Length: 266
Image 1 (cartoon, rainbow, N blue to C red):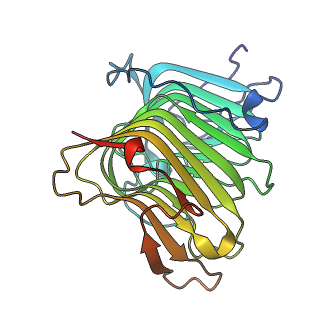
Image 2: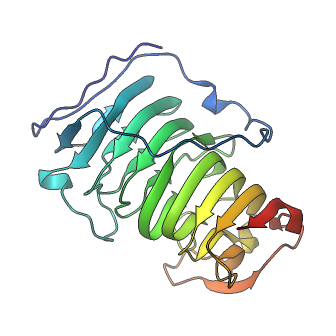
């Protein structure tokens, strides 16, 4: 698909591309064979972004480094920050590097694909998935994220997120199904062929009471000799806004689906 979106440093920065809905809206693809993970890319230039770039269809960033400026210049953990990129249902974002400050990263309003997207220094969250349909499918393939004080991928909407051939380092949680959103959904995550570098806290956090599942395979954890990183944690989610209660961790075959052979420590 051809790209018809562009970013600029002006306060009216916006972008869009017209193309048919992507295959992200179809069922999540089956687990892939383990493949080598790419090196962190060398950027081809930088673009300050002062207003959210709106994307529909496909947007290829050409490995330019996008970073927030002006109204998007924050790098804290404040909720409700605007994203650098906002993707319409079915949109594809690829070959993008998000630098600091990264505001609230990427928002997907429905099914989406993030292909070879890299976060040098995660802001509030790297990406938030907000589709309201149980059939929504989100795919993160390739890329990586560093320095996430809290969450890398925040799942506020419904549907299934697949994270494949990805690498993460220095993070709080790789994935979290929202524990206290006003509207709650059943959510699912598939984590396949991911390299995790300590320090970190949790790979996947799910709400058992809403029927969430996390399926993990091909995970390599580097530098965690003390096994301090929790692979999968279960919560009792709520709609009151209160901090959700932790109710368990580890594989249970129902909500946290993985085996010891699916996790390798180096």
